[in-house]
Image (tube, rainbow, N blue to C red; front, top):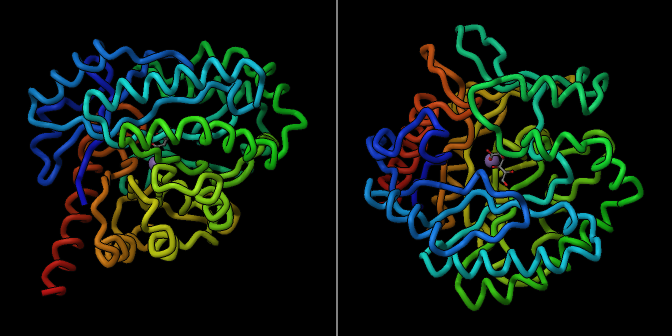
Length: 354
Ligand code: CS2
Ligand code: MN
């Protein structure tokens, strides 16, 4: 496996490339142009400039997270064809610069959803929290207001310009079923996968977070069955997965090690995070340690080791520790601790295999 670490860019992240380079085992920065609107082309010249900058810190640019999908593609509107053409051009440009994996998601309107970005835990650290009751009693507008209150950083998936049209966006999805959304994903994949094949860039879809429908919006990457359908939409290794144990792990039926064994040829990017689930559907993001949450992280790492995983892996989110001021879920300390936990488990598996 190849360890990487998410980086939001210069002046947009509390963690520097130098910080990342000091974490044992980290070889690459998972990057993106967060200022780009979905549907916009990423120009080769700007990609090459970013590449030069990241590589000058001794890190690779192999993984991009995310190249976001325009809502018209998810909605299946006639205007989607132009946005798909732009996406293809972006794939070609990224490939030209040496990018190997593109992480993306196909969640309508909202990317990830939480009700509290700073929930205090027993030990005084804070973490991202999802409270079911609140979601059931809040309007999308109120949620946006709450989540975007944090003034320090822009939050991917929660861009104020896009979400200011929330009513309109949500209304557009009325009547769009899961089957429709899946057909729209198939349409998109059928057009882009041949380009990916030609340029040797793997697509890796991120699961829904949380893995169930919220505000009655359709969601199609939440369950084991969803993943089975997804890989057959276009039967090519270039149509792959970002297996996020944090996103999928919020649902007790999702057995991540089983998914790793079953979809091993399609997993190009692994996100590893623990979450503690409560009976009432609430969940909180915890440390990576198996005992601290409901997801068996050691079993997950062992499964990756068993399949001889050669793809990319990163800690997903972390808690906010030791007074750190950072982007919610993306501090340095807890994710670095998570890496050491993953590497410790992996190294032990290596020894035992001898
Ligand atoms: C998630 C997502 O993994 C994560 O950090 O919170 O925001 C993820 O980056 C996107 O869904 C990928 O497109
Ligand atoms: Mn993730």
